[in-house]
Length: 247
Ligand code: CTP
Ligand code: MG
Figure 1 (cartoon, rainbow, N blue to C red):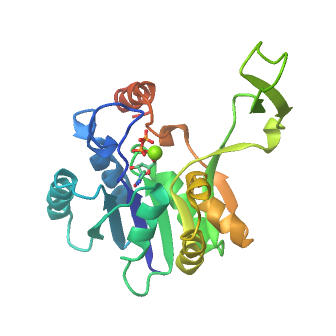
Figure 2: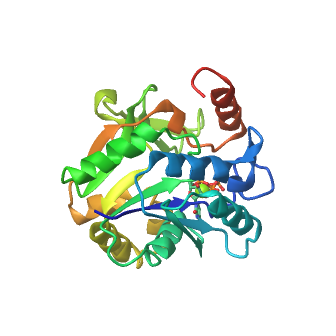
């Protein structure tokens, strides 16, 4: 079966705060994007890799062109598309560019630059075993509560009040690569194309769009190394992973 990997790298990296797209930020002497692409190639699950880069970018396109030259014969085809203004828009742009005959697709955040090969393989294995949708997930270490803004008289003690505590045993922190039957993911993203701004803003991964179709989403074990580099602290952790025994 033919599998493609979409790498979404079109974000601006506001929270990391480097004043450049996050995928270009250096990590252990190389860009976050290059780590992510090397990881995808090493996992050896895909015939095609499609990278969504910021519209107007030239730097990432050059890095990807140089990287493609390094790939050995028989390695994956690498293509590049302009991303969109939301992550889902970037995924949609890449979905439109996949080769005819692709059966499965893995969608991966460039920001999860150190995701281990075994996680890609677990996801690919679940697809091969018949799952239409599969995500890597981790147990949650913090207690998670829901809150609401306080309003009205006598509520000025704090800006928020707790409305509930989720049962942590049933919670998972979700990562990428997330794997899908291509036709299912295209249908899910097609349905989301008409979302209003508020609905669009609430879309944080691909699997939730598949959930909305009523298609079962399966969960396999993720990895701590797959952390999403979001804040400066995450970058320090990622640097440590590269240098330390887990790197
Ligand atoms: N992404 C994308 N297109 C967008 C927004 C995000 O391809 N319009 C990608 C990012 O490049 C990243 C992944 O989606 O690899 C997860 O997004 P996030 O961690 O939020 O990255 P940024 O949006 O770049 O960061 P921030 O939200 O802090 O600006
Ligand atoms: Mg973002």
